[in-house]
Image 1 (cartoon, one colour):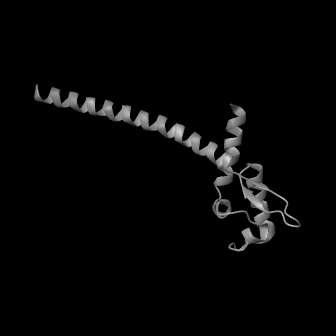
Image 2: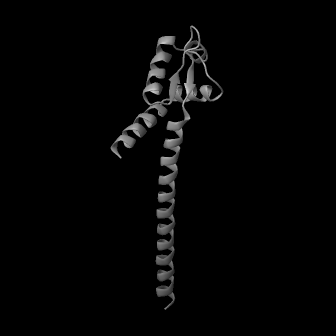
Image 3: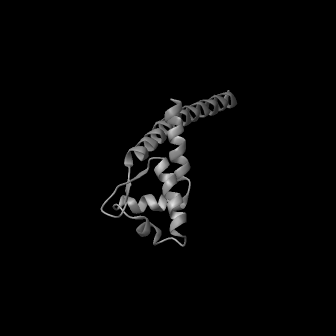
Length: 117
């Protein structure tokens, strides 16, 4: 379990940065080189490369080799795992919220009964 948690920590840490999220959104439309990924940002190619290393370490992207270029590719498996973790916990929290809501409704009904007696 600790290994999964560590991988999730890497994914969530990588996703915490808006530039990296924008890079992933761009890669969702198709593979791209570092130069193509750097175009919309007001930062150096070196700075974009640092973001790519974080994404690569989290295994959210990989780099392939096509002739002289090394396009980046979105790896959706880690995103799917993170989304699955979020969904499992959302169901747990929703269930707890529903039980709390039921408990509070019962307390209010009890107070109303005591007030009319």
